[in-house]
Length: 289
Length: 291
Image (spheres, each protein chain N blue to C red):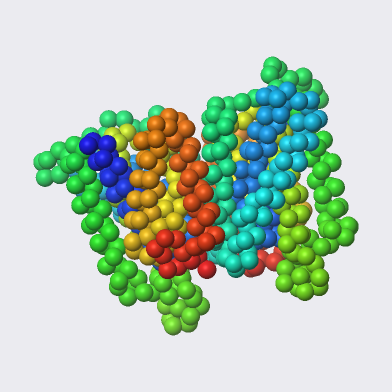
């Protein structure tokens, strides 16, 4: 049973993370490879606020969201002037730089040693332990942030994002400030990436930089692309599929080290096949055209 | 000390240049951000390991088979992944996502077959050569020699042969080239073969020097991508210049700061170049890389 809750918690975390990436990659057409950096910044910021400053979990998470959004501006403001492949490469560079800082700024992050002993979150005096309580807790937070994202996408602002994705020049000619809107979308996506970051840290109780690598950024992007970019259900379906499906290997008695590689091979192949036969992903309506 | 670091920079620059030239060849002509190029680099190292260590073939057999199989791997990717996408008019982003999938699948197949630990191609300590204050190992010398033969002949090939002319024609305008009777599909296959052979060769040379693990490809590819952009997208010589510059820059970083920040500085340079001189040092055609 514990195992089942674990899988469900991970699905929650990745559904929220991929949905936040969907705001930029799917709705705004900004394919970024630095989402694991925002996820990591959120995780570290929440953890450090809880452990060093002594804030509660929820206030820490809130501050971490703002902090991540502000940091995202460092990369958003310059690189949003770039287009296509150049934008992808600039975000990739940012991902590597953030990883390098997490890894090398030992004074703050303890670098490769990671931060152990992260306390379980306390909300209104209740300690939320792993297992079913944490599942409920993460579900509540994830639903709240999905709800907020849904309101955003359904709003005129969301319509503007899609307009920019489909025809940037047309949107600009209607008097919309395209760079500003893109920057806002990027910062909002980064803020929502901090939520699963904090949830992950408080769940695993230990973080180190290896959870927030380029590989992870590629994985999150794959969830969005496979589930369907630009569709609200897409990243959720993608997260269920890419987190739960590989667990089948466990029941086939594949050894752990082999299973880790097999999972990645499977998702690599699924990505190739989907891009070839259905580039919109399983649910999507935007095919990266 | 400084001369030794510059020599190390030169040796690293050789590898970056070889990898970047292949990456640039593919990027310039097909507009595909071919991340799986890093996978070919890794595969080159492991193919050589398979023949040389596991099967005990002679050195030259292993080396030539590695280059040949790397070329075939690249051609396979073009035939089975990129070319069908092109026929379906997939956008550059679709090709890029497929490339990510290819890379992830490929390196995990390698990890499954050969495990994740570090492997070496030659045991023991290497013969060293002393040139005044500079010490180089024999394999580093070989890297220099290979690069100094390969890179100029590659540039001459593109500039002065008919095949070079065809490749440049496809780079400049694919549609026009095909109208004029050039078989673009065949040229693309040739380009993938050539570029991937170079990637496999670079991976093998690197592995002879410092060994290999399944993750070696990505940092090398990222360095090559930076070299391409710093040198100038659209040219075939740019990546050579960019590769050597990057090699030197990283050596100076080690000297001035610490090796730990090499990656961060490399990418800070990338972002700065993208912002202030997106055409690179020798670049041309600035605004034609839209997705």
